[in-house]
Length: 503
Image 1 (tube, rainbow, N blue to C red):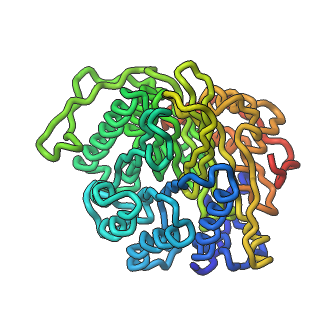
Image 2: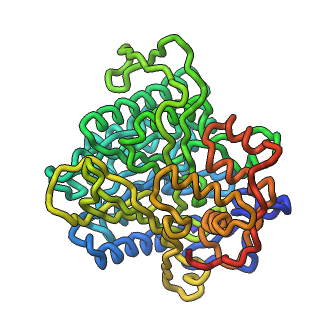
Image 3: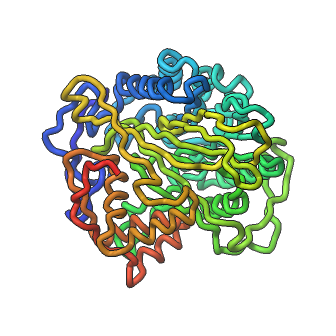
């Protein structure tokens, strides 16, 4: 466990996690399960895995194999010189995570994602094998197979079919494919991305994503897309009106990604990310920026250097909006957040849209997917996201009692009054959040802070406006225009009377 370090400050207007400049809760000593500035000790990871195992074993899906998506940052290296973690610990982290999963959730399959803190040097990936590649490949090969483990180690992204792991008979569904992104190739914090080779590597990666989605969609399959850093603006850092917009991804890559997922919106069943240490939402709108007329050309990601392929130009407003979720972390490091595990629920629909089967997945810094088949076998096309439930480890209570205390924080459809999990339903909820005295706005602020105990959540008008603009716009320019609008489209939240109330 890392030593406790207190960060003071804040601008007096917005209350948010300590990693964003705010003082963590007072009189909160380090405990057995961590604290505000303590990376997750082994027992916190162990209790989370055991919690998944227990809830899975007690559920109606207990005969099906749990799947775990690990969405990156297995260890907190560097962290702005606040972390004393040595390179040797970074290299050992993949094996430690894999070993804990095998010990406490032996039936699971696990799928790794590179986080910026998993890399040596910190926050650097060149699209080629790095110092941590071999240790990660060895650790996760038993879960994903040698071939996929090599792709993950070498270039940082991969695709893998989940059909057999989901336990779905071939007569029920077409392919369900997991697409794992290497978002370090899109991050402006990665110095490599600002080079010609880095720009090319990112375009090759996005071309690979588009071709994977095209292939899955062509057979009526569905894709789950997972990455570490989410597309969109760092709304908190960029909350001041008319200030520069900080983006998690290089803007060109954000727009290309938005174009791709809009084009294949019917193929994508889930987009989930991490990194921000908060529970957030992104509406990925189709880009409005038209592409240049000339054909773009990149290296074929499968053909190696020297093989060129043509990339289709962008098309303005092509496709439909989609939703990307930003799941909170297991670690409370850098903020006064409670450790969290998320459970996504999916449904299978026939071509006539009749519901034919249901299953409930879970997420640990990513997702665990499992199924209950509830209808006679027949061919289906659509795996759709039905809901998610978020569990939290009440950190202060657990430290006081010396034993883990898990509680359901909320269910998305119930908390926000959603008809379904589509982008249109979330946009309707966003409109309600903008209304004066919105209870849903207060809930969103509460859940963004991962149900942190003992703190009142208050945002200034600028902070509230920026937060909601960050939900609605992943394009940095569109975010800036929304944030700077004279009317603002936001009102201060009501008094925090619903804090600590389960939605």
